[in-house]
Image (cartoon, rainbow, N blue to C red; front, side, top):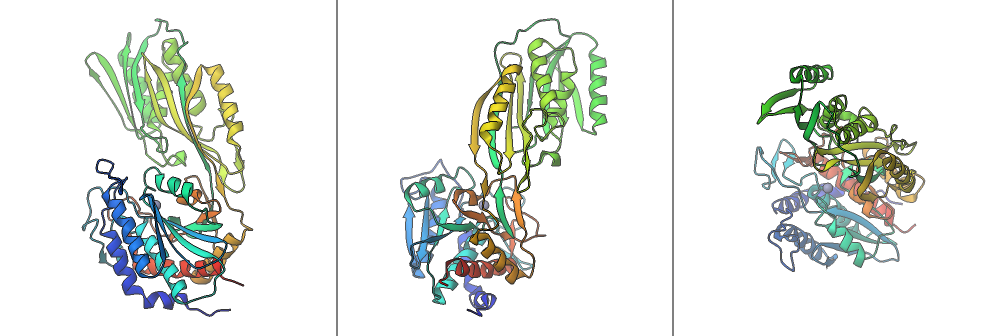
Length: 473
Ligand SMILES: [Zn+2]
């Protein structure tokens, strides 16, 4: 029907869009659990950012609602069905080394610099203006349109959890909190702690006693550092030489020294996101592999050989017997991001398993349980966030593809990722922008920025998307 020039509509409002984005970016909306109150359960900063959006929307004629001071929404239009746009106004701590004030929202070289510029306050304002444009044009819609604003995305998602306990789930929607074009498949995320059982007998025949061993603190990071403290009965120098040779062979930085009678071994690896362990070098696994070849007591041998046999040089779960792959989302991956052993309490491996959308975690877990049983290990903590997938044939995907292609002239490839985006809290929702292909992802880093040009382009895309998804035929 229409020949609306969405970019023109954005240009007309450009000045206000930037000013309102800066206003939102000035707010230090960090989680602050030390200073909470009933009306600010996650701290004053995030609440102020939520209020800022609700007030802005109210002034512009949207219906605002505060939901438990953890989330809120702005709505317009009528109709049975609900289109949801999911955003968040909390940010990660600013960190050090900024060129300008991280909450100054300074504009330089066509970019707006601030913590949250890209993740997710810039896109939040883009989506807000998109909604405002559709509303101001008075276009005929058959769905209600609602922007849902969360305040805890960067930490524990208590915002959306609370919100959807009390409020309606949109029929369909998108979250401007990741990448363009469209992420329609997100792998499942299972975090699993495997713990060595007590029953292993300790014999004292070994040459090397591992006093302690530790590497990594997070499931979703490839650990870049590992340290072990050992007692060597005989030929310590020879063992140190083997250690040096082993680490050199893999081109890993390493070191050793003696501290209060114990030999300390240290290894430096390469950190990477745990959803693709091949991008890093797991320092803990290299050190474990080396130790597994030493003459160890039974308990240590059981732990280090377990780590060696099932995890070293295998990020696909082949040795564990849980490898899986599908066309939509690729291979299952495992990242043992937390490894530890002590002679008193035995060993643990904490891993994140990113599994394809057609993979049943129940089956994978049953296989794992059976294997661990025979290896003297047991699962202690297990959490599972199910995979998220919206089929390419769905109206939502077809519409967003069309809009993206019209607005950018580029093909809208569908993306599958191993990480989780905010979109997975929607029943039928996908991540849609704001980062354009080829742009560096500087979210969570110092000097975070968003190109003004991208902010405007995203606004035009979101406006057309809202209209096409909600319009009456
Ligand atoms: Zn985000």
